[in-house]
Amino acid sequence: MVLNISPPQLQAIRAHAENTYPEECCGLLLGKAVDDQKFVTEVVATENAWHAAALEWEDDSTNHGKIDRYAIAPQEMLKIQKTARDRDLDIIGIYHSHPNHPAIPSECDRLFAWQQYSYIIVSVVNGECDDLQNWSLDDRHQFHSENLIVTERIESLL
Image 1 (cartoon, helix red, strand yellow):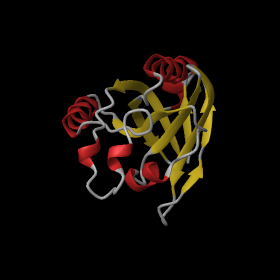
Image 2: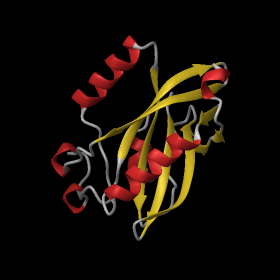
Image 3: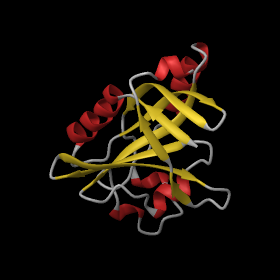
Image 4: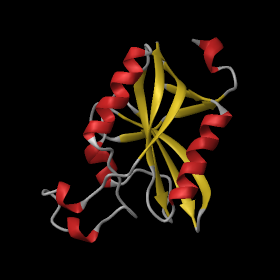
């Protein structure tokens, strides 16, 4: 798969990541998947709703917080999904930041990821965006780098 996104959309993600630092930011990518390509038509910033009690499986969950974990509240996800569908769009991906860490998926990212989505991760170092990478899951639930094409012509490609 290839994820197509516009420069203003990437800038919105970077700005969200920098404004949320030192906590992780998160949000959704709305658009369409056509053949082997996904086209982002809208970036929706969401609140990081992470709280340690949500993860009973993680023995050391109390040692983590919004500086190294993110969650999108189910109610917010459903609301955005309904709004997207009303506009004939789909949730095609999720983005989040890694404050003072590389833009590579963590084990927690992998455990909570869904195969059909693209995952943009932004590394933010000392409050400034350092790197941005796009990832997707394979059928063995392992992350692999996914091509990211930055283009102004998203609408004309659909």
